[in-house]
Length: 127
Figure 1: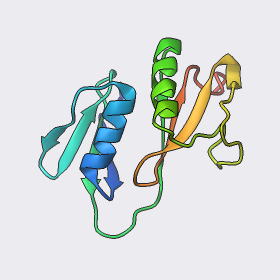
Figure 2: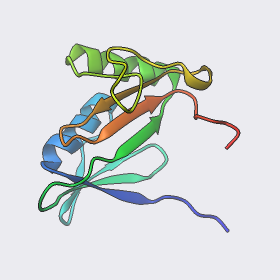
Figure 3: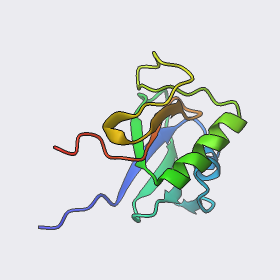
Figure 4: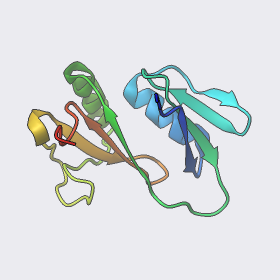
């Protein structure tokens, strides 16, 4: 059986702001409108479908595996824009990156409060 994640709906307060935040920081193509969504396609063809929902949604966590070069570029955009970042998802290590599993990782929030993460090595290769 072959199963792949195809898309996920990301509930946000402002889909243009949140989708634009991701495409600008990650250097991705502009989002594409599809029905009530703004979709952002990743390199593995998974799409993030940004949707403006009623009321406050719960913050979610989205981790992105990137190359060392991409990490440098994205992290450069994070710092250039003055975006707060942390070495941990609980926001207890501000202004730091982590080096788990021999790679680099950093957490930062999108405009709707979702916790985004970029990592250069998958965590827990034993999983």
